[in-house]
Length: 451
Length: 75
Image 1 (cartoon, rainbow over the protein chains, first blue to last red):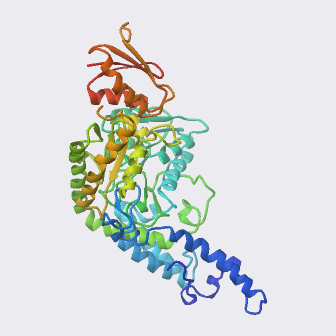
Image 2: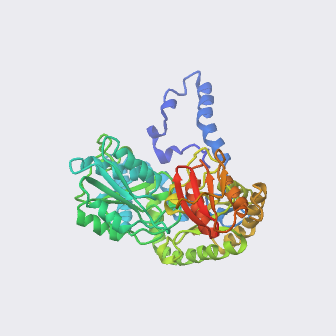
């Protein structure tokens, strides 16, 4: 399907021509050669990479069956397959929503109206006003803009950043970058469950020179919910703007109640990749760290990815009706993993908050003694089970997960299992069927049997 | 770390995780209960994995008197 040429009747005459095609016309004696060259440029790079992908893996059916082409997909905290509503919206919008939303003719105005409706939809689902929301190309870009734009606007107040020690690496990187010319990053310690020390967080806010604070809604590696509402109150009392990284919970839990800046990522809730969410509360001082651009409300430079934004908004709206039941269902799957993995495998440490009320519903992390995490990931992959790992025993990155280290958890043999809308008990059954053998084989290889 | 000397020193410098912890598990039985064991390891994971292992297996983690040197007491 992707190799089909765009239909001129949908895109309109001039819009069809790509820059490399403009010199082609019927009278050109070299037309055939041009056409051949164009086919090479236009078809091969598009069709060949796509042919590498498992067919139908993107649809919801692809992850459902353990014997399906996608196998048992247990890494929904990294990314989710496209929600069917997002898929339908994306396909429709690719055909109908291609016009420039900044232009004043009818096609452009209709594209702008669709964009504004999507923005309104997302805003209402995160408790924001539409003009507070924009769509960078990723959750990472959104977090970078949130921190750097606030730091830039508050230089006179201070240059320091307060955050938890277990923030996503993109937030830690942005904080480091924001303070590169002065200022410090105050990383607040977490407890054994991975929850930030709220009193230490609050005390750090009261120090002079704090430009901003940042706290995730839930940890991306262990699922622990952070006290974002209490942190928001403490930030308000201290007069420090709070950025909340809601990437793991948007579309799964109620949006955080108190934030000054919020970032998230659509591909984690079943929207297409290429859509982040950045919300900046009205009245929060924020200066673009990039050159001002007329598009993106002055916050996100460049041409809007309209079809993907429409699809992302449609998926988030669709999830609003199902997410409460889903949270209950996925919590039960997580509880099975927490209870049953230690019954099947010796020397396992369950990581994170044992209380389901203190966790995001969809993910669970555990570590297996005497086993390199990446090797365990590869063993499970061979059995058709896709998970992620916070270990770095064999990777080129020498440092183990900063989250596990901050929690004082075992950092080797680590596996993160995460669920989504296609996950069922059969996926847990499959994991439990292959995990004990995989761990035993690796312990044998390491000479660690019977320890 | 109250002036008490380790009964055994294990040197796993240059070994990647989880090998230092595997070595520790294999050799902990070589010292009597209550004795102190010293582990040398320069893998960055050791700093979290030695105390985490002690916690899981019921031994007392005594601390890191020098960077890369870990002391624990067999239970």
